[in-house]
Length: 287
Ligand SMILES: Cc1cc2nc3c(=O)[nH]c(=O)nc-3n(C[C@H](O)[C@H](O)[C@H](O)COP(=O)(O)OP(=O)(O)OC[C@H]3O[C@@H](n4cnc5c(N)ncnc54)[C@H](O)[C@@H]3O)c2cc1C
Image: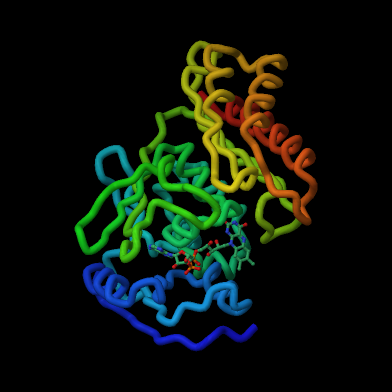
């Protein structure tokens, strides 16, 4: 319950935050919503000597359009994502998935940047961002670079973020008009991380699947893209045999931890069920 002591910094610009993080080195951590970091600090699983609070940086806030992309500032809260009409209309799976994250109080504080940068396989946004083909903007002392969400996750709590870098925004390509979508999450109760979850975005043409992307949450040390499962459904009308094949292809790449959510075989099995349900619901929604 009691974190270790730390120094608190509140930079007013990205450049100042990056400079502080570079100067302070490994002992410093960015503080966003604090709803993953502070719980870890209270358990002393994280003991940073410096917290660099990003709340004073206006440039990290807000949701804007850039061509066919929605560019979401890293410090945009989960509550603000839910309040966005643009997100609800153009990337409805994001609205759906955010509603399944945590609880209202956590969503008032937790940010999209913190959720995707955290590196916890339990977080829901990473696999969804991979499914949507999102890109993360990272800024460090050497400038800015863009990394595809699909290339960002290297292991549990290991990401492509280099020391001194912060994630400043998430760029989400708006899916095609009439696309189908679903985020299916099995959890023990409200506010729990997924036992297994699946994100599906697809389009139909003449009753057959034309494009499909499938992401998996919390069934591996990183979020996953189930590319073979997605390939298996393209060109089909999602008949029972195809659904079975897709679920099996997704299960084949899962390697969940055995924990209080269940043993490995159970979590893989329900992971396959999440894929099946998400595919069916997404297809029913597609126009
Ligand atoms: C009770 C409870 C239930 C929850 N349930 C869920 C759930 O079901 N699904 C889910 O996805 N999440 C869940 N969460 C986590 C919640 O969504 C967090 O808010 C989120 O994981 C982290 O976002 P944050 O803004 O709070 O980041 P913080 O906790 O401030 O930071 C998390 C980590 O990311 C780093 N970081 C933060 N922002 C940046 C940045 N811009 N650039 C670089 N590094 C950065 C920090 O240094 C830290 O290491 C839950 C949390 C709680 C307390």
